[in-house]
Length: 305
Ligand SMILES: [Zn+2]
Image (cartoon, rainbow, N blue to C red):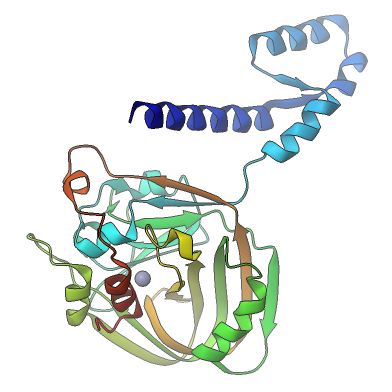
């Protein structure tokens, strides 16, 4: 137990040093052109650690140290599946970790979509609200979305065909991907969940009372992720999308769709960070040793079966 705590602390400290060095880097060839007092100041600051003067060898090693595109997750999906709906992280804090993501709200009060840095809540009556910074989440996953590949879609694709179209853009099943699909949906079916009160019921029970909405010819964006199978203990080992319309009047957890035309953008995520709820709460006493994957798939596929 002690060894684990030490290891975590070291890991966070190293990440901080790498980020700080990247931000403050000044290259060595710049120095000879400075006058003596500027050079002295730079060298003094470097000695104090306020700036970092990089040698070519350090530059090479930093390339390998640079933080990869990272998924940041608060709590775990199996914990949510068990009914741990107390929001513990504010959106002020969550949005420091990404501008793109999905999740839910305190007391499971709707579906979360974060797109282009803005967070939206779709309530069980289908209305869409901008999320206040002070609102809290019991489970969310976000990233800073910078897609490395984009593909146009010029012909209608139902959800199964869309999944087949995405597949070659996700070349390995061993890393996570952030996926954005935007365009005109000739048909889309989403759900949202009603706000819960204590004692909380498991997610698979709650989705039996979910609200389902279907629309035709709506422009909007699907925001989602696919996590590898080995992360099924903390997230869903499958694609998982939430939808928001361009006019921010419709949205929810995706159940089915047909994309008329649009584009698919994908970002590979080789970093994964997870923050767990505070000590002494329901998370610590929950039985997370049991396999939640069957209940989770039923809940996330939206049929509660
Ligand atoms: Zn969802």
